[in-house]
Length: 310
Image: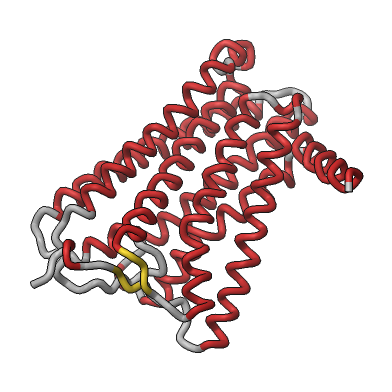
């Protein structure tokens, strides 16, 4: 019987069996990752350089773009390397690092999306208190709390998962290191401790979800009371991108983890994991920039300025 101390590496699930499909997956992942890097990089640069964008909403959007960059850089490069070189191994420490960073960026993103919901709620439902409730210091504290909570949360999960004895081999049924897949390799009853943490996490996420739903009910009620059509349109235009990003994030994650066992299959699980780990970071910048005229103008100014310099 082997345990985690004797495991030097894990075997990840290959995205494809044939060489042609492996190269196709490499090209697709390369395109998606470049789109994510470009889109999020432009948002970060535009918000950092544009003085008129130094507002709570864009400050949190900058933080969200950072989590998207982190998410895409955690899983995609290794998957691209595996597809290009036809290898599926990842070292024990590399797997632990991937688990830590994956949990860190996903939990930070959900925390920031919840904070951004609060920002939209205060902006529309309590506009007179906006400057007081969301001053620069308050925004910095909320962002720091989101990052710190995500760090402690991911550290706890990673330490707990990799302290378990593993005696069911080293083959993971996923293209990146994921906690549920590692738990399947455990032969110790102490994995129930990690399951307890996951249940606690689900309860916490459900609390944030209820807060988001409740906030948007209040937001839509307030928007519908705005007398002018132009005012309603402006209010909706600031909320819909955030709502779309939240819906994309939650729907992909929930369907990947909460789907009925009867629907489960290796190919479907693989497709869903790609969907929730790779697609949202690439689509989020597009969703935000399409509806936000200020951001589009800032990005355009940034791009034209760079072209003029060259």
